[in-house]
Length: 253
Ligand SMILES: Nc1ncnc2c1ncn2[C@@H]1O[C@H](COP(=O)(O)OP(=O)(O)O)[C@@H](O)[C@H]1O
Ligand SMILES: CC(=O)N[C@@H](CCC(=O)OP(=O)(O)O)C(=O)O
Image (tube, rainbow, N blue to C red; front, side, top):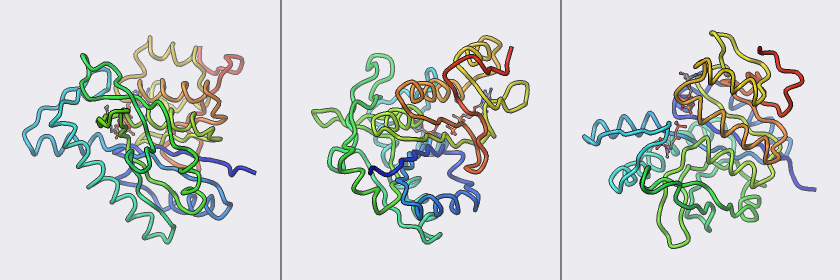
């Protein structure tokens, strides 16, 4: 039987301060034979390096407008700074781990999102899941949100969007969007259960802003594409906000 698959997106803020409990939970899941894939972000680190290199940061709708230079820097920071730091921490906890990226056996293929608006930014169109599942039989995978077009061009992909698409394409059982807040907040309190109607209301009331907007969109995309359980949290042992499909049990409004 196919192993249960858990996809965890670790945001750039979260990856700098992962608690001990994160590693113990990974260890438990690995012992149980679950497949674990971590998609990492790195937005804050890319911003910081851009500033140091004198490159302007432009974002539209939470997406980085990515020209050739920004793409080169993004690739260098994701694969040379953020990913090795995460792998090092996981290794330090005596778990087996491997760093992965789009060009390993055509792992992630993509196409342009809207080249005129965003430049070299993409969305995931396919995943080499046969090969990836072989890797995840033995190791925790840590994967950067970059994709390659069929003619070999590299694209920058928002990490939430990438994680949701990959979870959907792999038929994952669970997607955790691990961030720096304990869940989706309404007037400062975590919303334990969120459906699309309640989310729309929070958008309208401008309770959901900035980085949380693409995250929630990505979360619903995964849910509607067959991922059973989708969570937004800052703690693997606390479900934070659970996304759900029907409006029957909505606790808002
Ligand atoms: N309603 C909301 N609930 C929680 N966080 C929100 C909300 N609206 C906006 N945010 C912001 O979204 C941030 C998380 O998104 P982001 O910074 O992109 O995280 P990550 O780097 O983990 O992807 C929070 O730190 C918070 O500032
Ligand atoms: C196209 C696009 O916006 N890509 C993102 C990829 C990293 C990311 O999403 O990182 P966080 O999850 O830490 O925000 C970026 O360049 O910032």
